[in-house]
Amino acid sequence: MSGMFRDRDSAERAYQSLSSRGYGKDDVNVLMSDETRKTHFGDNTPSTELGDKAMEGAGVGSAIGGTAGAIIGAIAAIGTSVALPGLGLVIAGPLAAALAGAGAGGLTGGLVGALVGSGIPEEHAAEYETGIKEGGIVMGVKPRNEEDARYFEEEFRRHNGDKIYKY
View (tube, rainbow, N blue to C red):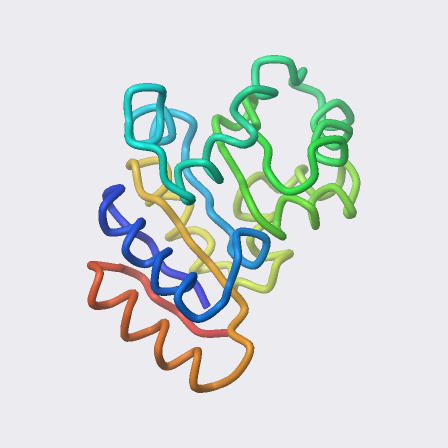
């Protein structure tokens, strides 16, 4: 399931709802533009678990070349978070690791291709891409059971989530 949040506070509260059910940072995908990361999670913002997750890949972002091979190597080297300067994105969570496993082909379709490859229908992936370009924060998780899925859907809505979809 996934949803989009328009500000840090909404995203933080949604992330806490995931955390309260025992989901850790390695269970949650977070995608945002590098500009959004700098605005909401930069050096002069409060430190939180979600903020730390957003910043994990930031330090290596400037060191990564624009070629897919260099990007894939960096994803593999740092694990589950990466800044992709060529695309202007920060991706944290299992999706980043999946892109590394897919090799350079995982990035050839851009963000929409990566999202479709992770199981998100193309029309939803396109909505998320537009939202990210407009400053949104996309968060996704694979619920362990139907009860968690219902709970997360309610919590995402309660915390101003938009474009909430279950897969």
